[in-house]
Length: 106
Image 1 (cartoon, rainbow, N blue to C red):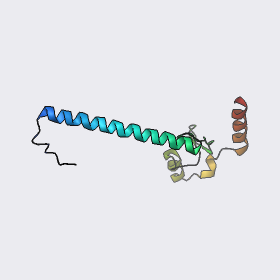
Image 2: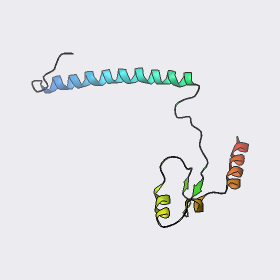
Image 3: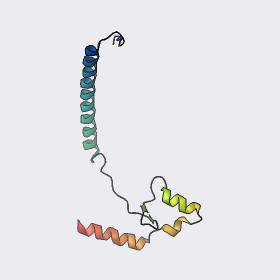
Image 4: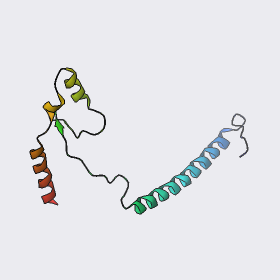
């Protein structure tokens, strides 16, 4: 691609160049979206179709955390105050009952 002297171009030429760039970017985006949709169909599941995980920990204000990803700030602050992670564990029996109730609704 030839080098373009942007300083020497007038406003109309710059606007036309910008329109051309926007058009090409739109074409590339549509191509990539088509490729992604094909990959999602080939893998057997759509992108973003993930299973939710029941929470394992509940804070004093009702906040929950499933134990995945970074530790939430509310939990980190309470642990720094001397509390134990097990103090916030949700009873596994109650968690299973909640899961069964959700399954029955479907």
